[in-house]
Length: 198
Length: 320
Image 1 (cartoon, each protein chain N blue to C red):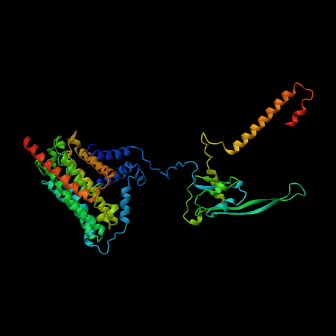
Image 2 (tube, chains in turn red, orange; image 1 turned 90 degrees about the vertical axis):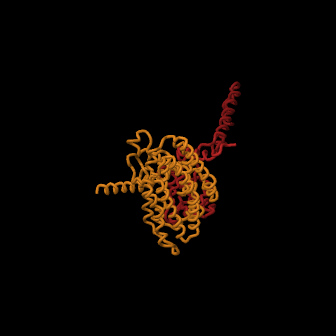
């Protein structure tokens, strides 16, 4: 049986011990919080990558992305050829009063023009001011952190895997060629003709 | 003329202590409670660790509208905060701080005076609860009354035990005749006195009458602005008075090394330690239910205080 009153003493001990420890309060306006990687603060636009494909605006469940664009034609590369046309972005705005931070726009963007930024201090006193235009979205691009390193046991990223495969293929080819050359050397008479085959 | 000046100076000093010490306790409570909960507490008011938080609170309270409910008993409603607060000022006058007459006014039957006047303080809550014309206030007021009935008795018995031991009712006289082993001899009485005092101040864990999450601060539900601030001030003044009294009665007041020169410092130090314990208890323990509260007083505290009185009597007879 525990000593009578030991529970009371335990309660006092807990509070006293907590008092001697460092408090956990985050002093936010004075010191910035340390946000975890992939924090969803705001959506930044890397407009150089944007091709005005409108995928983000169409996929957005809230319809909070506004895109205006026009087409510009450039003269044909060779005389008599066809004129080239490309899309030019006029307006790219996200209404953060509607945005629910689902990140679908960032997921669907095929050209890596949208990114999550951990920046969160963009409160406004008027709800209409929460529609942020492309210049603001472009500015937030500077706050986007580098992607965090992969886990030690993670699968290789696709682009690196593709590049590695290509490099390996090339190396194998070069080796096969060298070996073929070596075999051809004893005869030596018609050497050099087989080079182009590989 | 000189005597008058002397008295006035003493009273002014007591008034200053009355206005400063409760604020110190309140600020300590802010900070200690925060750190015990892993928080920082006020950090901005006044610049350095929020030292001026209570001053800022006072300014805020003073700016608020003073509302009296339409159905309230106007005069009683407005008078209640003063009734709650002033007794503690009166008690503070007679608490001896240091040797050689370092006291606002030495009263021969000081112990009687102190206990009687402290009982009046609770009347303030009762008046507030009755006059507010609010059922929660009434509940709080009645609980206050029940609590006063239950806890005044063990408090008186414990104090009587000390008076028996010292053979005097004068507070400076009690401190004068204190020996270090009294603290052990009167230990039970001291604990009962301190606990009952906490209950009388309606401090957690004995704060069922004000229970803000259940009956919305009990008797103080309808109060706003300065009058509400006065009730809060009364609570903290009550802590100062209770801790001072416990120091004087059970911990030997100014006794300690170099008591002749720095005796007052010992009194203040002991009072401060007790005030810390009051805060500590508040942070550590949950609120007692009303029936547990009553049961604790009648079945635990009163028997203990009676045993203490018997012990005091036996030892007194044996030693004399």
